[in-house]
Image (cartoon, rainbow, N blue to C red; front, side, top):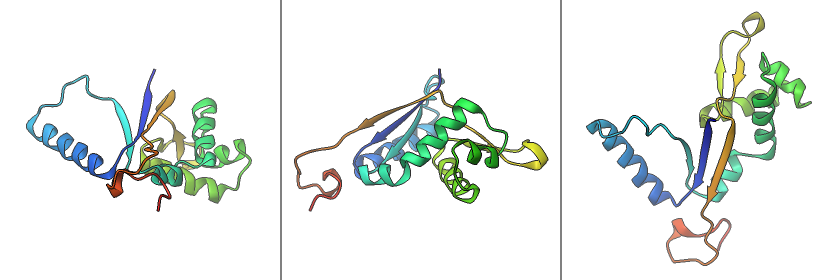
Length: 139
């Protein structure tokens, strides 16, 4: 089973993790079994803005029904093709799906390479003074 792990962590930790990943890759220190698919957001607000209920619904529909085109995916969720196209492009940028050539009449075929999504959200309820650790909409 292929799983996409989505995490929300503070932006400073996100930067540190990304730098460590690049340094390990440059040094050849990444292990072969270290291919875990992870999508990290720097804040809860970033997650909510990117993974709206409509975008999650379209990803789930594609994973279940394997549409041959963006137009077919739009029909499956009963939404306007241009709106679905924008959502699919956003999900592609995030790495949640891929748009592959080979659909009917040259159409791009959306493919979700995961069977499930697991989310870990670190949402502090008490402010620590670190702006990257504050919960969404905290003043």
